[in-house]
Amino acid sequence: MLNGIDIASYQKGINLGVVPCDFVIIKATQGLSYVNPDFERAYKQAKSNGKLLGIYHYANGAGAVKEADFFIKVVSKRIGEAILVLDWEGAQNPQFGKSDVSYVKAFCDRVYDETGVRPLVYMSKSVCRAHDWSSVAGNYALWVAQYANNNTTGYQSHPWTDSRSYGAWDAPVIFQYSSKGRLKGWSGNLDLDIAYLTAEQWKAYATGKPPEKAQTLEPVKEVALPVLKRGSKGIAVKWIQLALGGLTVDGDFGWKTLNKVVDFQKAHGIEATGIVDNVTWANIVHYM
Image (spheres, rainbow, N blue to C red):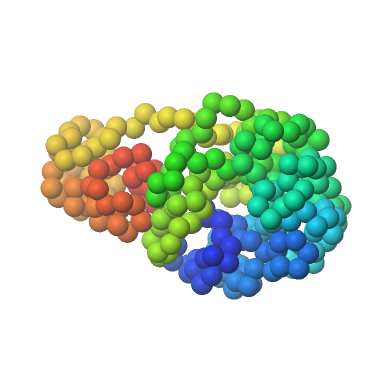
C-alpha cells in the first residue's frame, strides 16, 4: 500500500520534497481553458524527489471529447510517467446527475484512444451506487472518496468505509479518506489518499498496461490495534519503544515513552496527545 496526497492550486508552493508522501496526484486542467498555475512547478518538484505521479482533469461539462483533448494537450509530455485521472464531481459541472455515465465513458475512451493509457475515474462512493457504471468499470479503475468525519488526521493504514458496495467496481485502487489531512511541511489542509497498489502497479497504470489483479485490497471498517497511553504495559508497548528508538524496551509506557510519542506525532502532523491511537499506529508502521 502507498500513502499520498492530491493537490490543486490551493496548495500552491507546497514543498513536495518535505511533505511525506509516496505519490502525488496534481490537478492539471479543468473544462476547456483552465490550467492549474502551480501544475508545472509541483509536477517537476514531485518528479525530482522520486514521487509516484498522477495528473487529473476536473470535468465541467463543456463536452467530454473536447475536455479530453484539452487535457491531453496540456499533459502530453507526461503521458507514460503519470497516471491520468478524470475528476467527476457536481460542483461547476452541469452535466453531473444528467449524463454521468455517458460523459465519463466518452472522456475516458477519448483519452485511451489518443494515448493508449486508461485513466482512472475519481468520484464519491455515493456516486458509485447512483448509476450503472458497468460500461465504465470494466476498463477504467476507480479512485473513490469517502470521509468518516471532518476531523484533522495524519495518514491512516485502514481508513473507514461503510459496508455498502462500490457499485460496478469490486473495489477502488485509490481511496481518498480525508480533506483535513495534516502532514509535516505544510500548515494547511491536505487531501489524504491510500493506494492499494505497489509502486510497480502504479507505474503500470501510468504506462497503459494496468495489472490484471491490482485491486487485491480495499478499505476496512475496523482494525484491531490496541490504544496505548501512559500506564499501558505489554508486548505492544515494547514494539512502539523499539520502533521509536532511544528507549529502554521494557514494555512499560512511562513518561519517556510518552514524550517520544509526542515528538513523533508533532513531526508527522498528528495531534500531539501522547496516545498511540489508530492514526499514530498507521504512521509509525509506515515511517519507522
